[in-house]
Length: 205
Image (cartoon, rainbow, N blue to C red; front, top):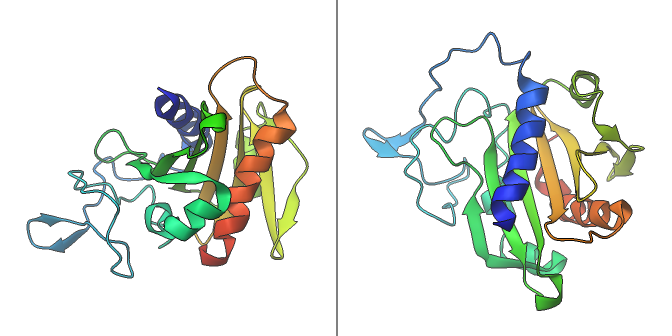
């Protein structure tokens, strides 16, 4: 349940932000395979995904602007450093050829029941263009992490996401509290920022 709520939040952000940018793309997403007839199960460095995907078009022309793969970047040590339960990892995509590519996790501490995090990739030209397209979002002040500009936004009082540009894609990292009453928004944003900070070194500029 928690996972579906946060994926919906992230998907709305991506689809709203990418609608214009993706309008010229071929409707049939590109299939990337490891060999003829087999669905790709690794990132571009050959690291296996933490699950077996049946989606031939998980990598497609709407999310191939960067080689960054959240599902392998967030390994057990990274997950532990931010309190995620690596065993709850799941593909963020729910249908084949979906715009977003990435993963979702729940938190390991029972005291954090109701918290979840996502990190996804979708092609977009810049933070500025994404923010302009999504002016109705609750945009907070940008921050700097490792010399890179990180946009911070929210779609509701119980979610927060960061956006960092990675080559021809945006990497969006989201956190949400899926119960009530929800904690203050800055606390939710802190969790999204924490996961962004933990992975920023692996995200190509």
